[in-house]
Amino acid sequence: DAGPGGPYRVVLLGAGGVGKTAFSSIFAGAADSMDSDECELCGDEVCEKEIEVDGEPAVVTLLDTWDAETGGEWSQEHYMQTGDAYLLLYSITDRTSFLRASELRITLRRFRPARHTPIILVGNKCDLVRRREVSTSEGRACAAVFDCKFIETSAAMQHNVWEAFYGIVRQLRLRRDPK
Ligand code: GDP
Image (cartoon, rainbow, N blue to C red; front, side, top):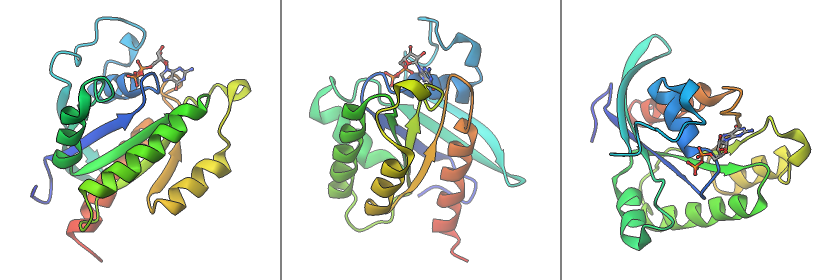
């Protein structure tokens, strides 16, 4: 297990097109290249960085599972077994991606039956209000059923993305250091 300040392995899970690459870019500090094809993370899918959360440093290793869907069962199982925490993304403009998030949550539970693994359900693209297919209350209800936290974000507007990363670090700390 990781020590008190990490490194924490945080895995981005979700259907294709929901914004995982955009999240990785913001985390890596390359938000301007969001629409660029030249994503520096696509080579190794990993970025490790020290961030400050509530005045304390934490080292986070971010894993982007961009190929989890097409990469077959092995790569998906690999990520389900190796993460310390999960950001489970869907797009609020795409109901299929919301259903996919539920499937991934169930699969995750199969791989992590005993341990309490921090998970945040993330409804991304909340800037696209007119294309919304999944309501905020549906997202929140789903998170309650799945016993995980919930946040709506917009990677395009850089809204709440860091809050999602901070939230997962807080949960990882709580797990290690129950108050
Ligand atoms: P991935 O397949 O999960 O890695 O998804 P990407 O990060 O590649 O995003 C897919 C598309 O959605 C890209 O064109 C992004 O620019 C766009 N996108 C990602 N996040 C947002 C968002 O919050 N709002 C809007 N409007 N577009 C987004």
